[in-house]
Image 1 (cartoon, one colour):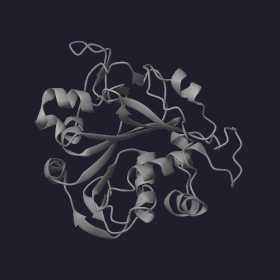
Image 2 (cartoon, one colour):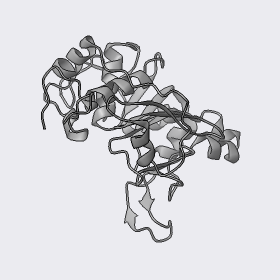
Image 3 (cartoon, one colour):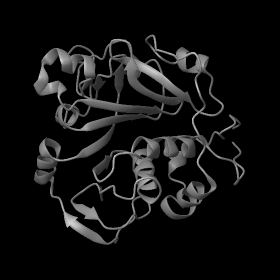
Length: 262
């Protein structure tokens, strides 16, 4: 694989797309889970949304924006695990989670693969996904877009999509907000007919046909599908020199350049 230093890689495009998902949140607790979500949210904090509140992923609110997995940054507050549940239930928060499966109605599965009574594979369990999707804005990050992840119907519902939330009643739907799904191929939302997934953009070097081929259900596809924007020179400097100088991002999304070369 080759990656000229001035070339923009797929991971960097994904980081910018994730940053854009948090750009208009204002003063809110940003809760990223995973390497690219952490990178994208910190990029948003340093560019489009300086009001974002960040944690170290464990028990501290941060006053600064440290590099990925760095220690010793300025501490602004304390948020032990039990307090996280208070924020989930009553606070303003945008969480970006992973998804082992996500279906056309935006339901997410991180619990198990197969029948609930006797699954073929046990995963993390639902953890905070039900509370997140009932109470907070929620987005998903998928580093390897495939028909195994983007499925017609998830085996087990961990995170609740808008259609199912509406069917469950106002307790589940009032604050349900599946905002964005970002994968290594494109960006999606739930703005399709009957609360279905819609393709918003394809990353540079990716075709709509490639996205369709790797999706296990029928996406709503607009007549004109734009290309996901590339990060600006300033954003690239922040990503490469400040937030991720060790290039950890490439471990999650291999260094395909924005133009598709490897």
